[in-house]
Image (cartoon, rainbow, N blue to C red):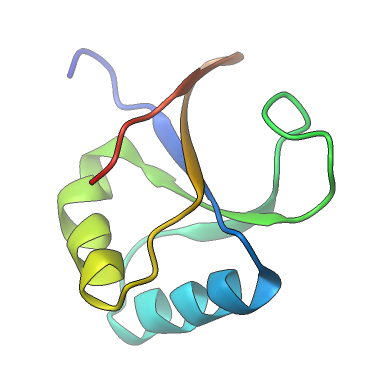
Length: 86
């Protein structure tokens, strides 16, 4: 990884994102709740945002709780790209 970008996770429902938020807060993991960027989805909604360097701590927690996002993006500066997750 050359530069530490931001990872934006979009969920299929408000309930799922709020459950993910509660779980990550409980585990004291670094993230913020942000509006979904209009560059990736013109509909309003919330997304989870964290630094790419935190993915090895955050993604296993979400996966174990079966709270995987419906879409994920990497933002580096003003540019967004689709981000692959498992």
